[in-house]
Image (cartoon, rainbow, N blue to C red):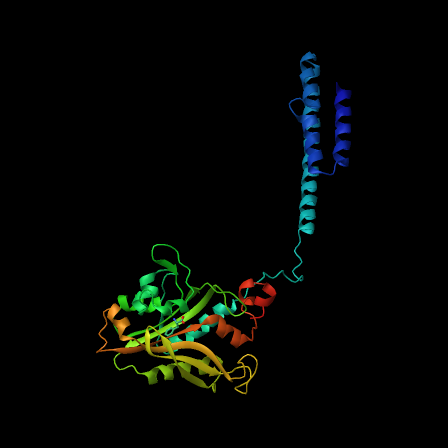
Length: 338
Ligand code: PHE
């Protein structure tokens, strides 16, 4: 028994010395000291010893167990220390390495123009109004003085939905919605998406407009020209010339088309302005009394003007974009340039 114990101890100490990993050491603890372990097995033999032998052997068993446990404990501690040191080494963060930057998007040119135009008009006391894109015929046409069967409805290639509902062909219905909600004075702009059944290099079935409406006592055509001059000068540069040409819209009287001196050639004549030196950028006019009748405004008391511009056209002129379709393809190589 004594011999067996000594053998066990020597073997155990050697095994512990050569084991390097925490797992290996734990394995050794189980095979020696576990419930079915070797030392436990030997201790079961104590019962067959004589009463004289028992105390001395018992003592030896205890000292062998203590020795093994001590050696295991020390070896485990150092293995754990090595493990930690290895982890610290392998997980070290090299703070001198340049970080990976998150990819940041850019604003779409349409959004940039909407923001810039809105900021200019905010400075002139206009606030932003909105309306639905699926609109009732009454707001899109009827209240804007397009009676049923009126030929001016043909100017706007309408997408119809059902039961007098349609995709709004312009942002002008927001004029009606705003005036029905609020009494004069009114000073709003309404940026938004509009739809027309039309598609080529300069027309898209879905595009954007910004509507403007100002109604108050004593608003004149001079105020319209003044506001639009301040606006175009701020948007395209200080000395951009503005020209108003007579035009027709059912909801304004008189009506005008507004041109700016060509931003490409400065008015000398080029391909973009078709050698005229001028670029049409918006439609405008004094609000027709017939429109006031539909929203219960008293045309004897107040007057006002409205205007509407195509945002794609302004973006193309401002950023020198030659094909409108580029604005909707969403090629990031194109979009990142703005
Ligand atoms: N709604 C008109 C269009 O889309 C533009 C416009 C707006 C004209 C306001 C005059 C006044 O063509």
